[in-house]
Image 1 (tube, rainbow over the protein chains, first blue to last red):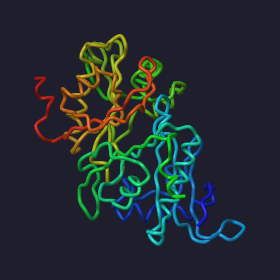
Image 2 (image 1 turned 180 degrees about the vertical axis):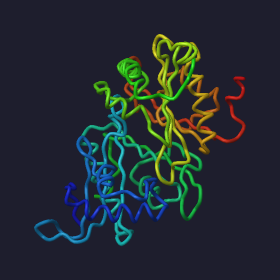
Image 3 (image 1 turned 60 degrees about the vertical axis):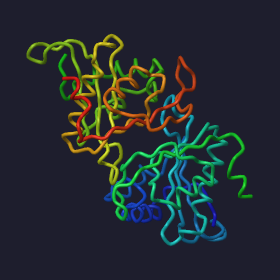
Image 4 (image 1 turned 90 degrees about the horizontal axis):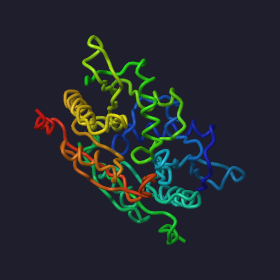
Length: 178
Length: 178
């Protein structure tokens, strides 16, 4: 696996993963009928934000395999709130359980810390998405609140959305990964 | 005071209030250098959302005075989160303390309830904005969490942003206003 910044050419690989995950209906509150252009506008965040991709293989020179996952990050709010970052992550169904999400998250946390953000906020983590909740807690995020019934999960019905947060700039939890 | 749906012609009155409130630096995390068109895109929410305006005077036929305030409302998230509403409110500095915010909020809560939303979430209420926090609590909202230091207030420095929430569709808190 290698991780790099996304380019417009990655949209062709990102869009099917985006659509699969949204259609599964258990983790993201995005519309299901988006065009490639709308997916690009939502996901491929321009500076000061960032969109990254994780591919199988060693890299462009060593060959790139399938797209395993993608992440986007940037300021959670503009103006006087732009010192807190946010981020979103998607891992293809074929690549679940291989540490792709963790690798993407460690890269995003490194980037946000280097960029000087004071903290990172996740606005809407589906409470039944235990793989995500557990990973974020391992990476130092805590659940600040759960908005009751705010997500209509395909398999679980109405479930809560966690607001999760961690400070950045101090000793980083991801340093424990070696 | 009368309240009605905003039209594109209201932008000329909304934009100065928007800029004044953002520049004051104590309540909203919006950029300070927005064009009228950018303000319209951020504030004048199209269907299924709604943007309303409160003017002095009895109405178009009886004469409209100064714009006192404005509000926008709509789904807080798309897709599987679109059953929870959100809303934002701005009252001109000249019209503070006259019940404009409360009147706008009651109209927004009526609209959101009639539209079938299950709840309303405020994502970023500045914790030092006591006029707002107190009003929302009077109208049945509770503080679910406070994201620490997430807003750089001009007069208070780094302060928290409350996530506030109330259910809709049950006995409505605004009915106590008669």
